[in-house]
Amino acid sequence: CAASTDVHKKFLQCLSVSDQKIPTYTPNNKNYSSVLQFSLQNPRFNTTKTPKPLVIVTPVSEAEIQRVILCAKESSIHIRVRSGGHDYEGLSYVSEDPCVLIDLIGHRNITINVDDKTAWVETGSTLGELYYKISRKSKTLGFPGGVCPTVGVGGHTSGGGSGVMLRKYGLAADNVIDARLIDANGRILDRKSMGEDLFWAIRGGGGNTFGLVLAWKIKLVDVPEKVVVFTIDKTLKQNATKLVHKWQYVSSKFHKDLYIRILIHNEKNIFLASFISIFLGEIDRLLHIMQENFPELGLTRENCIEMSWIESTLYYAGFPRGESLDVLLTKGLPPTLYSEAKADYVQKPISVQQLEGIWEFFNASEAMFEQMILTPYGGRMDEISEYELPFPHRPGNLYEIQYLMFWDEEGEEEAERHMSWMRRLYAYMKPLVFASPRGAYINYRDLDIGVNNKKANTSYAQAKVWGIKYFKNNFDRLVQVKTKVDPSNFFRNEQSIPPLVE
Ligand code: FDA
Image (cartoon, rainbow, N blue to C red; front, side, top):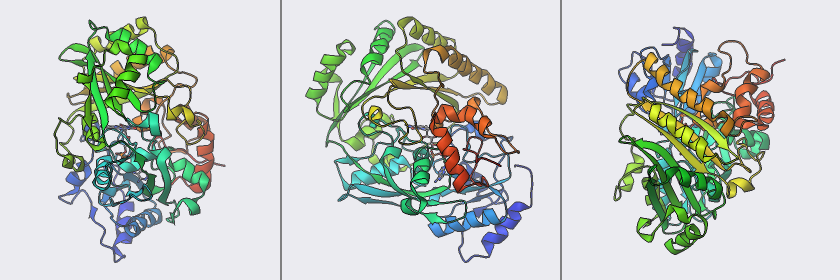
């Protein structure tokens, strides 16, 4: 546990004087561990050495969450906020400062309004629940959020949120039209009362920084009754390198309805480039687009599968065909693999020779498995200015790279060994990717790029080291908003925007 302290007693005392019975767990409670572990995604942050929260609370209503925030303020205890628990560095539940974990697991109402194509989504909800509930109301509406159904709507949208419809509709955050937020003074605000600067900052500037988002009002987007999906695997012998090379030139220029991502991976020691696609239209039009723009991939009608948009969310999440949609509402098995991730943005195609250099790294890895996911940009992402929201990687980017690795051996040395592979690959990639400044994505959280001070205030210059990678020139505006709305830095973590201090 983070250093033992009395502040949590003050906090509990404050909670107890209210009529509200907010579920509260301290390490003495028999359910403490299961509540803590419920949405924890990376076992790297579930060891005996990991600092644990002094108290976990699971408030349900807005009034309960507000009460928790006010008590935390009054007792000067640090807080962490958790929605889906998918933060790659565990920042939603791991803190070296003694802290209260506000887990929003019980705060998950979703109200869909088909007539005006909007929804209010409480931030404890998962993407899977959101997609499921939309599909129960309409076959022709969807939402352009991320791929993994267990990701929380709270953290995901606070960091931008990218999914397979981003070429047509942008990020999840691009489709937020209102929000309810508790600020550092414990006030509940909506878009009108928070003002446009704060509303801008919370749509991509990172979670647990400007306030606690209670709910998002989102715009639902039109999807056809049937979409088309396909996956084509290519080995090196089947020209994988040349195809990846060509994909770099065409994938950001395809019609917005077409999204083809590439998954680079080893499958039973065979190197594969898997081209995984969704097309928001009919098979004939897809075949025509592919014949015109990327005939080398050799797409045929037989490769194409027609399904509803909601079924395609299961397809992308890796579920077998015919799986019940109810799986979108479940938590799945607890993750057992340790993981690490990083990101890059590419503005100029990487040469065939340089791609071959990347593949070498895959041969040299000792991890259980590693992946590179290449996400095509262009389309709607080219139409939105880099200043529109905090997420700046817009026009000019051909694609995003996400590096991921997973291993199953316990221990810090093992983790260090595997992560050093990732760091070597990241160093190799430096001259091949956009580097002024080198980009990163706050939803693929990476503490290697810089962190705030643990105890003292973090200066603007220090935070800019990591902040400019996530936000480019939007960093300054984020600092201004933070200074105005939370000068005491109540909402913070190792990579939250710091306020300017006198
Ligand atoms: P978590 O609860 O860990 O929160 C993340 C951050 O947001 C923390 O700092 C937390 O304090 C803060 N936060 C959470 N709720 C908040 C609230 N209500 N108000 C204020 N702050 C809040 N990304 C992507 O763009 N596209 C994708 O397809 C995927 N896929 C994916 C799959 C898997 C398996 C993982 C582990 C991760 C992804 N991601 C992703 C990354 C994901 O979007 C990112 O980790 C999000 O921050 C996760 O949001 P959660 O609410 O689940 O995390």
